Length: 141
Image (tube, rainbow, N blue to C red):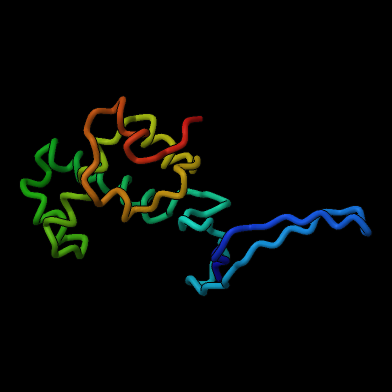
């Protein structure tokens, strides 16, 4: 279950009760049994690393090692062994190994990435490490 903020929050000071009334319009959304609150732009309020992203990064490094050591000759064969029929998708997963070490460590350690999920990394991203966080919208520590 997710809670999505659907409008702008308002604050009203109630003089008689000497308190502030906060109104946040939200909508409940069912998502694989997981509760999550998102901001109006769709990012989670309580951020955690997407488990699929973490698993994909681990898989990418395993594939890279198999290709570099010669254990496997082609990404297509390697992906097919893991039930992936799209070479394009497999190459996008493998591209995760080009993320800066700082971003990769954050993914593995479960540190905040500003709500990014695996799908966000399937789009092309900059290869220059010094520019990746800014381009991906990852908040500075």
